[in-house]
Image 1 (cartoon, each protein chain N blue to C red):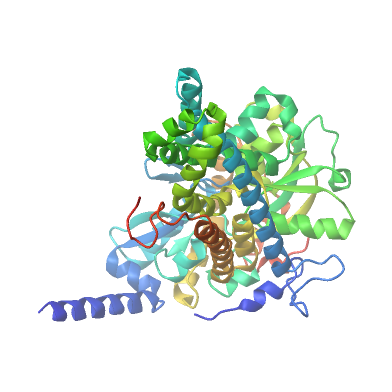
Image 2: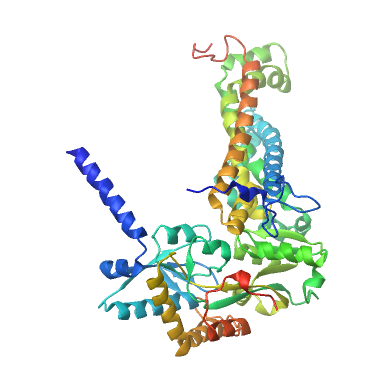
Length: 299
Length: 251
């Protein structure tokens, strides 16, 4: 009897995972009446307020996508299950079906495109340099002999390495455990500059004790398209998400969201990030596409 | 599961597979980087182990001195301070908080701070083990030393400590292996050791499984080598009839 139960359980699990991997996310959403959204706990585009509340530019945009999906599927009610993801687990969680749509701050690049699909680019991240306002550093040429901090597990480390090679600079590179840690190194003088995504720099500066003491300087070191990630080979679901993004661009709701999260005071501290819409992001909205990072050139 | 072990032969700038897997002319491959990270892990661990053994021995001995209540209390305070605070928190205290109080420490590299933090953390544990080892000896040994006219230093040196160290070799072995595994916290203060390598390389190459397997193997090799060395010492320092050998009972 027990053996039968076990066999049945194994069969059920196998069927379940086969179903999850069948790649028909729309059918899965329709039958279950819920969608699992991958969100970030602390990132420039999405973060948590605690108590299971997730907010931010990309999180809210994803909620708009979900309400469009609900309309398209003709569902009276569509539950959103929020699943926090990290840099380490986001790709596997999308691949194995735990997360249906991940809208955090994931860079669309060629190596990830082997494992997952990306919706249209909704934000273009520019890697910049933050320094103390009185440091006299104005660009990458001033960084010779200085100590630079960046965060472990980000693509900025690669950017830094490439620039080191291209410009023949010698600088010391240290790595923070996370963004808060990296910023603390800049704040406490352990590093002269913090190299990271512009939105993360702006957010950290706005939340610091004395925002006026820091500024973002110099050229754009690298350009990275940020997009929502979804399972590979699910054309119908990707089209539904892309359609919703185009709708949000066309009717101006994406721009309104941008203004809300980057130009107005935001919770939890009611501080402005103050990062105006970049030309690169505007360009991505004018020509919706899902090109990977490798297709972008630093201007 | 399709493996891609070639990833270690790629250079870290263009991700092109390099002939022979080792970078030339200043180029670095992921394999080069992995080996350098292993070097950092071993350096941190061995330096911390030396500090832990020296400090742990002193503190552990002080805690068993007769008629010295304040020395004993000081030793107890050391042990309780360093074993009650999580290791990662101690690292941050050394790296961010202590330099805020003593600005001169800002120039001290993260490597040294992490060695001190890990060394002191482990010293508290070794001190406790050594104390247990000394207290496990029959009282008669201490009295015999005194009856011979030894000073306190002498009967510790010639009677108590040689026996106590032999007793605590097994827990000391685990402690030495632990230090290799605990050294992984060093990534938090940007020492480029194996854990930092794993986090960074898996992000750059998206081959997390291969990267983590390689790093796991290196941690296991390092800890196991220490285990073998300690097993050798244990065998050579055994006194027949005194330390339980092969389960045949104690003295």
